[in-house]
Length: 186
Image 1 (tube, rainbow, N blue to C red):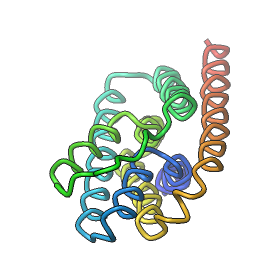
Image 2: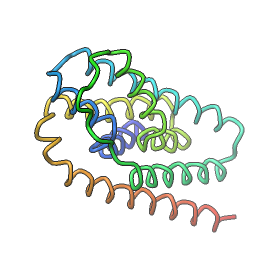
Image 3: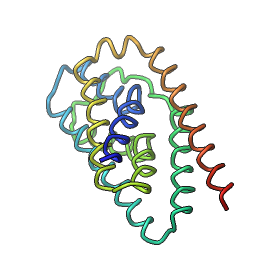
């Protein structure tokens, strides 16, 4: 249960201002609210969370506790670096109406974003299924906010970038502290 709650909160916060949320908001703002877009974005987010949890479960089977802690610290640091360095791209002037194209772009951007690194880190230390479910719910909530509040979200892009940078710094610091304490125990 703890893994679900941690993953929900962390993925929701990491998903605010993320590429997938901004892409859904931009497409909704440009093309209108399409429920199919929201469903596809939540589907790809859930699928990529499940893949991250599966990878963590597969890795955890061959690692001891300290190794899992160290890998989790690297995953948190990677989430922080992704939040600090990767910002949502420019909005397309003439976006495609193809749901398949949206599915591909969302899946590719979500597979290596901060939320999936967080799910990987939490799944290494808790029950992977609960981490995946928490990541799915938290990421889905962030995407839903982008879909429902597209206009205000896009208008606050500067504030979101600043908040995303702050979250990235906190995640990077958490990864460094976890690695430091884990290596200190050796």
